[in-house]
Length: 309
Picture 1 (cartoon, helix red, strand yellow):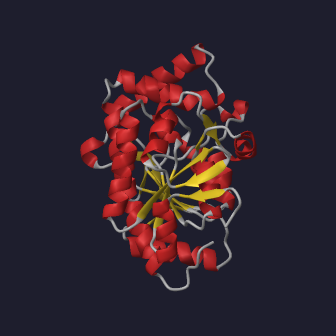
Picture 2 (picture 1 turned 180 degrees about the vertical axis):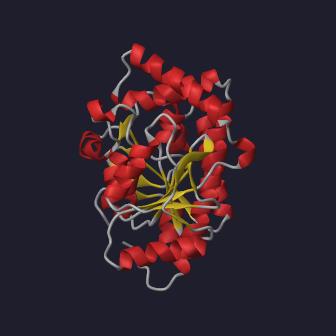
Picture 3 (picture 1 turned 90 degrees about the vertical axis):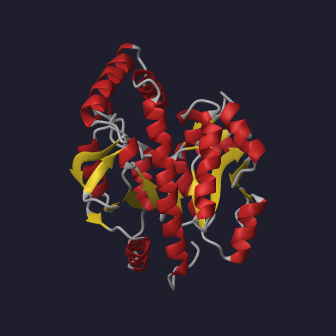
């Protein structure tokens, strides 16, 4: 066992019993949603995963340990602590060595999941290439992590606040396959169709698991994006969300918002401008991703030859 890992009783028991485990990030709790909806969402997502036959492992940094699986008190701590750091790859050594409270991004959660031998990770949306990156060089560390870390990431694509076309080009350059579920189109978080196509459409968990196993057995290291569109009943209209996103982006530029503060600022503004509808969409898509991710984890556990990392 890695010296920095601390497994919750539930996850430790699942490891001993050989049960499928699904990793969950914690930035969505600390920075992605307001309280108390963030706690309710986290609990509901964990329930979805358990109901599908897998075990949830929400990941965070607490008191110098990478906690793989959180108890109720730890979830509440993350949800109510404004000083929780948003932790990516570069931040992990600092937060651990300083004993700070940290919420893991997609990149950091992938690293921690691989350390813990977890193959499947569920999130809302991955980071990507920001608009204007040709001058700002603002590209999420999530994309580099996907190029190097052997974890399948189930998401609703990338947020419309990003440059989706350049994000997909970046992933292609680094050999990261993008799978779509139920449709050929790559989703754009709040909407089902970004206007771009995924690389491959694989609808069943067994197909997805077989693809992932084959990739890694070939020695092709790196992650896989499993893009799963938001349920149609909760999807927003592309024209509406595009207009609202442009307004929020302009407000961010006018206010000098930059770096890690951009995404939380934009999500908060989009929530306000949609009168809360975007938050309902966000919660619905995360729960839907949890269902798909749990089914994938079960299918991967049942495939012969896939050993813990």
